[in-house]
Length: 223
Length: 81
Image (cartoon, rainbow over all chains, first blue to last red; front, top):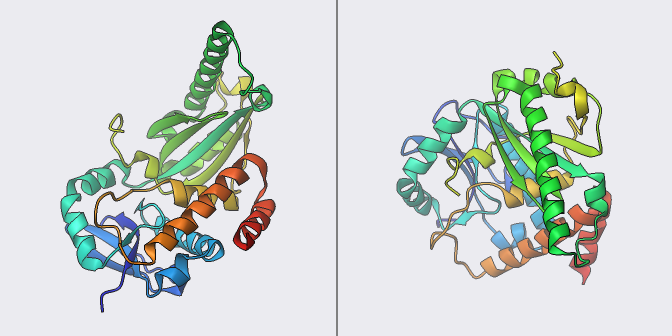
């Protein structure tokens, strides 16, 4: 009987990564389909695996572990957890329809990983966004926020130089996130450049990674 | 080599530290989303999405207010409600 399959990621056809275990201790399958390699697990009991917050959290961590093992060897384009298809036929049907998207994305992120830098500003964290303010004050605050994001971004780009293949950013309510696409052979240079970056002026920057380059899957400006 | 910009104002925290919240945030909020009718339509799918909503709410709350340890406690509380 065909079982539902949980998708992990798509990679180039080679190299093939052997993953120790998938979610709910399932086997991780991989197969070449339509010019890419896809990794998935057949899930015997969907409810048991994802039906409760604690089992879902555990499955999410196992999902992350699979991606880590793949990322250690090659660059994956991850699926959002949990993406379940009815069976592997549905998977092939999906890949057939989206072949161009995956090919282009794999070429864009080939040989790279993603790092993430989150900026928080001390005064922004304490700001009371619920209290009404005048239009003038609002615009002034927006202008200041835009200016300091631009200043940090400029410094990040200057410090890291050509070790970053591409930058993307996203403004959130009280923070700003930058995503750096870094070639594997530039990782040490990228990290070293950040280590030498110097002191802070009211901004806290937090680095995490390497992650699969999910922020770079879509072409710039396409979303 | 430090540049002019680097001498001004950057300290990076958290290198090599990936928290539980970072991981959950990434797996639940990033990656390719498949739209359309291919997504499984078994009876159990409501449970999947119910569960997902529960944990998403926990993550959002946790990201605002809690550290990873408190998040784990919050998940247990939610489950028992």
